[in-house]
Length: 433
Image (cartoon, rainbow, N blue to C red; front, side, top):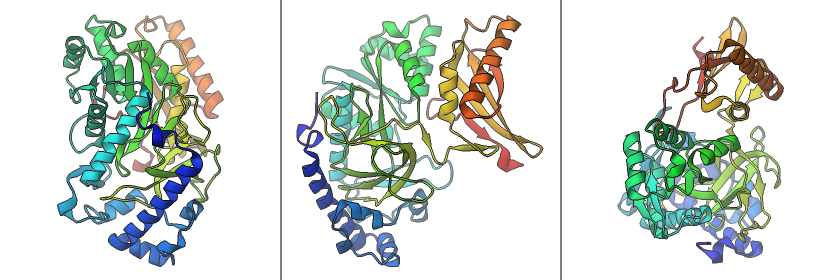
């Protein structure tokens, strides 16, 4: 099912004409109504009339999360507060939260775009959808809630935590679609087994997972655990929340809602635009946001863009599943390492679980990497020779993939703390030394 055939299957030439019209309107809007952008444009000698083609977006300055924090809370809003009907914000774990405002039209657009993403994943009005994101300032729960309601699905706003109750609700309410972080939804499956319930025996047929990076190996674990298709969706609070992009059932990339977002991929070091098919940092310009229009937002997410028509019939460009970020890349003894690489290694080795921790530290002047990973119940037999062989196999695979030596510590099943939200896997202690 395609929610909005007119825009999701639009001829690319028509789509680009619409994008240019909306880009010009957005640039004029921020220049006239957001003092921060007026100053920034003036400093770079840019006038709104300079934008005459989509390629001209590259002359515009980038926006970073620092700009949102420096203008906390409302400094980047393009509307007076009596026109703002909703506020959301990031968690603020690294300082002041980034605050996002929505007009009523923004909320209507948001619901419509999430409805697209839900339909792409295969959700219909016949589904009962259980949302395990936390309701509050976080955009994920409310964004998916209203979009799924627009599709006509029945919503179970279970929120986060109370894991045994989540399983009970799935049984009693006949939940058919599950929404949450991949790590928490794996934890739910694990908890169901501990309760004597096979999660695959429940009625879940599709999972809409997001809010944290996850690998294809993690997808396989989720699909094996629940016996249901696992789909990825992409969004970020600074841009809108969920609804920026989502996978269709073909699973060949996430369709970007390009009529509302102009996307680029740039070299993260130089800022220069890259061509389709080249890996780089995703940059997004909002085209229809009223309350908080954003110009060239550097997401820090690493991806590749594909403009070719999908087998599902949609013509919107697709982004490769995000596997890492420029700001979570670890540099260990001069080697670039992404946590997703470590996860892929672990998930491809029998006997390990999706629960692990990455510790980076220094021994003297040298960087030190330790990977702690839980074992499956079947592997944790106490046979020293088997554990020694598994540890050696993981080390060798790490060295082959990462080009560095890592210490591997094997842990008992269920020994690492479980997270009900975004899971923290990386602990880098080098700056404390």
